[in-house]
Image (tube, rainbow, N blue to C red):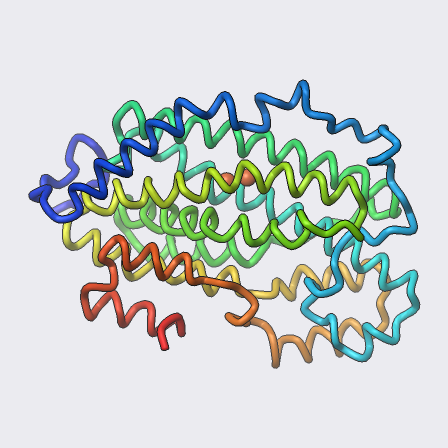
Length: 337
Ligand SMILES: [Fe+2]
Ligand SMILES: [Fe+2]
């Protein structure tokens, strides 16, 4: 039997458990669609003052572009002993990587998931509301890409990092490898939906620290804060989409979703050491090899760096942890005590 994820052949599982949650989720999604033009930052962009030439946002070379505590080698003696100018350049690289990873999340993780919904390839969200909210989200993410690209260009020009080219990020590499393991299209789509859902649950936290940091470059803080405000809405959009989707999956598809949902948590906990190695070599940091090797031993995947409680709560709400198989899949990734 071929299991096709899509409206035409989606399973007709008796729609009893979670019915109230689904209608509640659908109502919320409907309301959020109606609110989009009021809350979306791209709609407010004309009135929103993101003039990079304004004095408050003017680039200040004396300010750091990024937070030291977000570097995987923040306590490494070789980094702490480096000249201040080198440390500052490494922070600028960190800001560029942070933005380019954001572009990856928007364009390679979240947008394809929205497109699957728009093309009615995902059950439970193949109606007008599901497709419209996926379209709203696509517009938001396109605007976020524009924002962070502007930020990257200014930083690269101001810091002399124009020719820095980064390798692929681990998050997308891992997702693509996972999709390649499966032959069925519905499996590949569910890996994409799971990764997008976890990304959207995490991204507000990912943005939060910088959005509130008044010591970094003011332009950087404002861009991250603008993005964060849209992502607060996306967080609940994706939780509600996941509710609508999960209930319409067949039992086999639900088990599969419960299996893959914890994986992106570990992918997010990865320090992206290959990207860091490229950047440290680019700025001529002489202890690159030593620092990267030490981080690979102690900190390559560090679950303590991220708060994944939102993903556990989502899995509980979906009922994905009601089966031993679901519990085992979260436990295998080290997410359950
Ligand atoms: Fe975004
Ligand atoms: Fe988003």
